[in-house]
Length: 270
Length: 270
Image: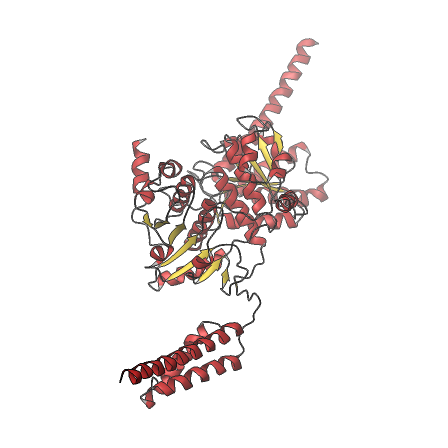
């Protein structure tokens, strides 16, 4: 669809500045493409590649990017990590907890908190990601201000390159995102007012009184409270209240009709 | 490596109970395998498959799982979503914000908060994930208590199936993870004591006094404070203090030696 393609082409425009994502000697074009896709999913666009193993441009990257082409088209491709981070002033290296290096280790959450504060103060932050098999070298780590380590199942802790990029991009976006924790979209309707709900309750309770369901009398108040609580929990819309009153009418009318028919059958059978 | 394989085989054992991950009509074996890998990365093991398109078992899944075989070996494979969720009592459907349905929408963070509370109360929660191209049907959504929507760049919001599983698994683990936001691993050393630092300061300042660097006298106190603050920010270890004192000695001795040599050269040249 032309509309979708146009939208995709525009997806990288007018986004707020975010951290640079530096892939150091990435091996697979598929991973570079998937990383670009993950970045754009979370509104990041500054992709940098240090000496991609299979050369550049690599068509496999474009194939895996699912439309995040503009990031690949504009990727900064250099030959050393030093060149890639030259204009950055706060660099976090994504890696497992280093064993023999004295360097702060942040959770992704804390890393993003610091990066956002840094960016707000006019800084230019970035993440470093190592090659698929070997990860970042100690020389790369020595270029970084700190390390970010994703807490993982210690017995199964290998994270794919594109997944590591995805998680950092997700955290970045999450920290700046203002979506409410919980929403109840209403489409074309609205929450029922209490008087609409009370209309439903009365309707149902009158019908139930007729059937004898709410007996014995001393249990009636508690039974009614239980039923009302159930409907309150459902947080009904105005539309649903009307639907439900329709259901009550349909059930009672149908029962009435069936009873008459059965009586009629019996009568004619007599 | 046998050790690694053994570890991988054990990686799914003795993990705390987490939510079920239900993949509804997944199309690609690669995605099923990548989803299993992502689950085990974050210590989740209850994988359920509803009518995988290419049949089951699918060797491509095992190939993509990078060793998370036990999840695939033990996956519950059924033919309908109803069967897959039958024993669950709190089901969240991962999908874009639904347009014409009145159902609570949670952020991943809020979803996991509620799931953890639910699990703690003895419940049995699970996530639903739709097929790659089409997503969950409205009938699937009607089986869910609520919807989880990952906040994404609105102009580029298609998330790969395995990536959606990864993000939910990551959030699940994050909410229960107790890794401190920031750590400074010390390897075989320890933070320098203030008296060790003061030893370094004094050493450096004496050498600098000799060179005349700390003049004029009225600026000396501020210059010293600036230098000391720089070293305080570096949060040096005991080892680094010793290294740095070695550096100071080396620099001064080298300068002294060079000066003598140059004088010697001049002398002999005279």
